[in-house]
Length: 330
Image 1 (spheres, rainbow, N blue to C red):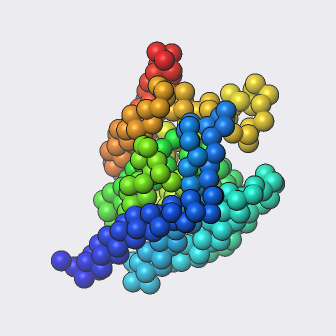
Image 2: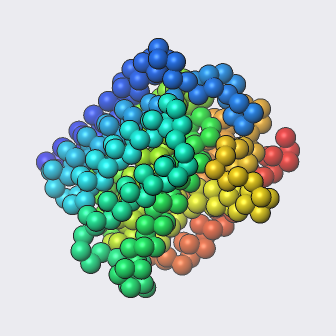
């Protein structure tokens, strides 16, 4: 076996084990400190659950990324992105503890995005020359900011964020390997920490990520997709998160048209409406099945991008329609 592959595999395996062990420890510490997500009218759970385990999940992921980056063959901006993600996790943990104003949270997210963009390789363009360089950076910042927040918005039932992180991570790794460019090992590390966390977040979840996890995970997953795009792999970068993008964006648009406060907690996402009682695992598995189809289409996009995009739109529409049908049946 190639030495770099052996080291990469060892780091990924260690990250998964560390994520599981530290999540278990964090769960007990959060419970002892009464740092709990208490159910309300808009909650999808019925009993208090410790929240904030994202702190250790992000710490493990950052450590793995730094080790992999030091070994080489990974994007040069991986280390600053990992460190910024840790800072974002700390700010978001404060939000978990006592709540922060919406404006403060958005400023923190925007600062994290702008700081990371300063480390982008010179001349790397996410939109591949379709926009002038300055406009490319501005559009990238807005898209990344939206992705961070939608990833946080979508963290509403047991297992869904771990499933989505693992699904996108597998897709990024597969596309990177086939294309010979991209952050394959970094993506696999994200898969490993997500699976380690899922051991305790699968229904019935004994611990939640909290904003300390969902916000920085959206940040690092968004960066992985942007790295694909700046390598010219724009179609896979669009396809892999397409279900999350569609559910969050359509739901936001519908709530805006109804005149609702869009940042207030709710249960209007398609996957939330699809719950039949408390069957979080069933819905999470449906998301997993859809993500598996999107991973396959992301690989197809390497040779047939337009066909793959059309099929991905069909799969995503089918997921939304399927969830809506479950809601009507309920």
